[in-house]
Length: 254
Image (cartoon, helix red, strand yellow):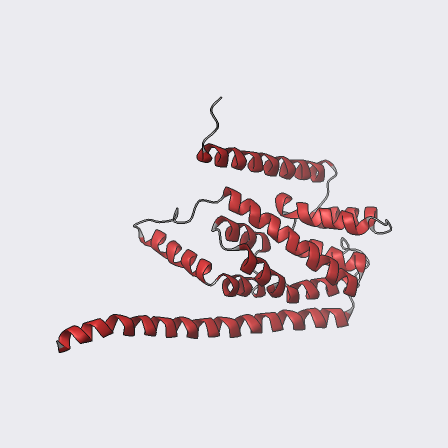
């Protein structure tokens, strides 16, 4: 029997991943619809089921890993971590499982994404996309770090980074560091709540102040890093211009 070609294997893997993805998404949405649960209601139901159990951390970790597949909001489950485990243990637990979750989504995006260079094209949009993609691949850590600090959609960054096949080590390092301010702020918010489905009326004001302060610091760091990256890009462009002018000048002199 003839073995499938590498291209056929790739499409088989993609079909398998897409099938599991759609199945999990549909199952979760069907469960929510059958029980008339909102996003916060589903989160509170999970909290009620695991908060007193010894296996609660494992269940939370599994839920965090499944979260990007069913598209459950990362911010909500991070708040749930603070409510379940408190401000200190909550940060440790969320940091661990959020990074594993990001790596899983990155792997899915890498499996489903095209090969490097597949975005080539002649139109202006394709040229802009190629330039932005090359920048992301060349400055992977800085680019992902800034996107995390700016609180861009968590799963979008994960899947996009995988689809563009940036290196996994700078991706996960930038995710761990860049997501930390947001993780701390949302965990502190959750740690001050009694329930997640009753709004934020009973929130501890000091936790709210701390969350807002950390959020602003995160945006400030992102601004500084972006400014520095812009300076580095300008210096690189200047150096490239000089390199191009040197042979021209030499030719003119000769």
